[in-house]
Amino acid sequence: MLNYRFPAEYYNSIANVYDKMYEDVYWNIARQQIKVTIEKHIFSMSGLSVIDIGGGTGYWSLWALKKGAKVLFVEPAQRMIEQAKDKLRKEMGMDLREVPIEFINRPAEDLDFHLHFEEKFDVILLLGDVLSYVDNLEKTMENISRASKKGTLVFGTVDNYFSYLKDVIIYGSWEDYNYLVNHRRLPVGSEYGTFEARAFEPAEIENIFEDYGFKVIELSALASIPSLKSSIKYGKYFIFESEHLFFVAKKV
Image 1: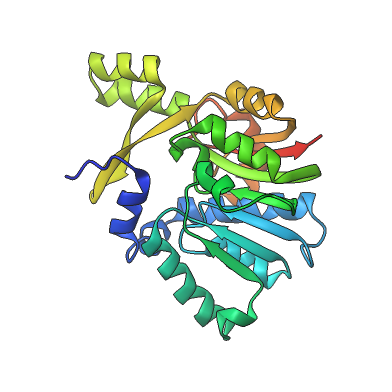
Image 2: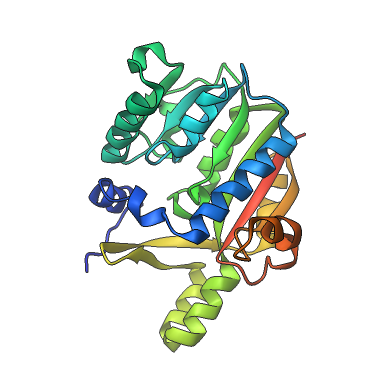
């Protein structure tokens, strides 16, 4: 199994099979939970400016475009961008030059090299565990803050530290445990390879966003129960057990 230094290298290697890897019940419920939550906080996306950071193969950008938003798509893995463009062409049924979307092939922490952030975004999407995968969390948060205005909403997911801890206790070694405790990171991936990712405790998410001028207004387990209704209703009670945390933050 290959061990990748950067997540983008791993995602380049699986770009053509990525969508098929996320077709199970868990991810279907997760996506529906995210949609319901976004629509709870945003009455209409028509005309809103959305930056989709870690856009992957374009699932969330496509959803936002169909709801009338204009999108800046940011993704460090070039082959994922190619998959996203193919998907958008097919689903939108038009030349992408006619679609209100711009593509940037950069990691989140390097956005300032491309943008001056003169335009502030209404919505920021971090829905591919972006904060768990970035190499420089502080620089990423600076860029997110600079791209925001008062009232900007951020929707994101991260890997849960307590899920990592449970897995390392059950399946790992003493060395794995010490590494997790000291570095807050462990290898993640699939049969196609691994890369290191960072996990977050629920309180860390709240503290990090507060440091950059946001307030976390919702924090829940993602798809904690194999039922959409129950995951939405009871997710806040499973934030110490779930594999992923789902958060909503607002610029204050």
